[in-house]
Image (tube, rainbow, N blue to C red; front, top):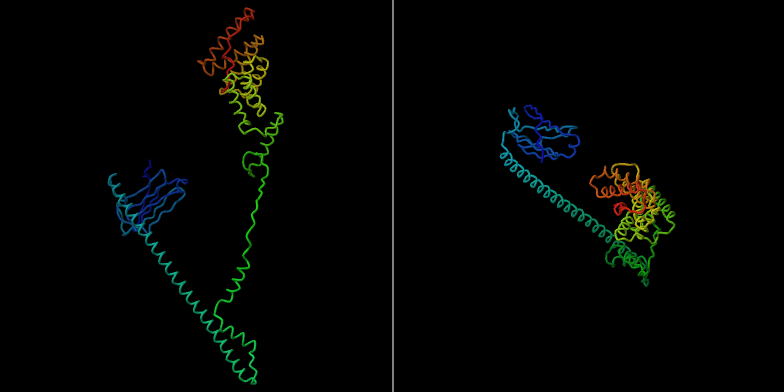
Length: 413
């Protein structure tokens, strides 16, 4: 919705009117002007300034200047007189009707000017063609005149030779070489001297047909996955260094692997899918491959801990959960859920290893984090139940009962 600018100032003399309209410096770069004898308009989104003038102005002599923070209109009056008012008092409907009429007149005027410009351009083109034709005609006449002069000159030379030959001894009828050359030049048709040579050169310059062959194109080996850029040379070297380090740590050559199989996030998602399907060995293999490529993703260690718990590898599960907790730094509310799951997995591993006190500490830490994250979390209810069970076991010093911990070591998403 445009904003109508009504905050402006104006002053007048007998012949001119000066109008100053505020305009911000960044908006003054793109201003559209429309004007007629009784209407002016300036559009600089989101603002519009327009005036329906009381009397007529000289549109061709009037002007508008962009200042630093204002637009300055200099309107030349059609008649030298003092105006009592600057703008007509019109309703919205009347303004709309007059605006449509004025814009239609302006469009008609610009169309007429465009047609006049096209006609003027066509006229200038025709004049230029006529001048070129006249120049070509004069050049042709000069060439014909030069040919006639040359022909007359040769004819005169031939006549002189005939007269000299008549003065020669009787019986000597041999024609000199000069006479023969002149006669050939006169009898030969007049043509440009260079045509024959040009034809000979054209015939001699035609190359023989090319033989078919196969062009072998070899490209330099490219390791970086994107096109080479000079501005990205440092980033490319850093990337190559990290990739070489990752291959060294992995201990295998990944030239035969696709780009997907080299992405740790893709490997994490693949491991999560194996975990949901119950293929825990496949999940561990996928997480391990991802850790070899990028050892800084805590989710890979956390999810591998869950797979180890499912297979009964509690000692390895405790190590992975501890490593995941070390990587989740700094501790913020946004990673509270991930830290809670790591504590719960490490607590479950300690529990299964018989370290009830350590397991209880880890489960309580997970419960405290989940309370701040979501008080109605389903995992929180399961943790409360497991904490009660392990507390009772510690109090009774009994190792016969096993807790129901199916929801403790969930896979991180």
